[in-house]
Image (cartoon, rainbow, N blue to C red; front, side, top):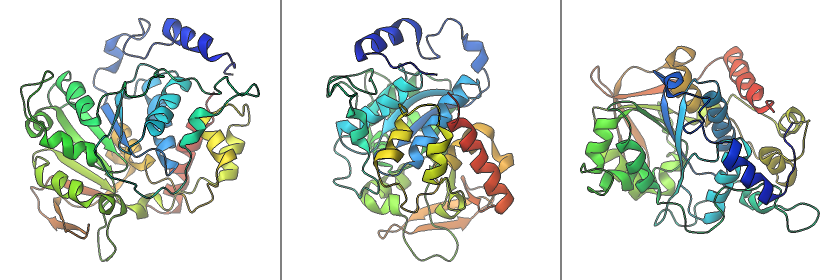
Length: 346
């Protein structure tokens, strides 16, 4: 069980004893050999499936099934980055760096407004319920800058990007030029360092509606699709895949019965999360870490986007794009159990 300490004591304790896996002497680098190196890109602060996706990455990292390199927050606002910091700190990964998009999408739709949970206090009204590692506004790099730093440090063709929201920071990365981190342009840096990108989004088949994430910032989405290197694989998880995986608010709260001081549980206790929320985002994380075997996938092809945010898939044996196909009821039950098992972990 996690003990409730003052913010000062927890921060000091974390610096001394809860280093991230990169810095923990008890976790040698060789345990990560051959596992996915993951950068998680999230529009945290609206839908709660981002929270479960991030929680799963912490636990996958602890099981040495992946290495979480960093978190890019793709929704403007220090409060959203602070909530990501709360997650990092609470789950014992305080040194995982966080980047925050700036000059991004202005006032995108918010489905569940929960960022304020980052600032909840104890009964004394002053002590934070959930300490953070960074407490000064403006201290985090821009999202695209964090991408450049992290990618430049990794072996070639080794990084898996999981993006579960907007592609703003990715568009800015692809437009970036040489800097102190790398002499390569953003496009060349992605081409050299990224193995695959897993995206929650895309509308495939006969559906006529546009993709929500891309439509919220269509200019950024068009830049992303235009500049993404055709040599780097893309796997999409359209909404209908995770739509079958429902984690109800009652289940979420019951699964963390051992404490109320849990950031995800507090979101569900203080916000209306009965909004049709489904587990869309964890589908990308599961495939990025556990591989393709758990999913049915489309044939290969190429993809483009229209000004109305419709994604156009064209089959091609040499294409770099695939997308997940919906599973049956048994598959959805299995996926939900994966998410619930990790959310029950103390």
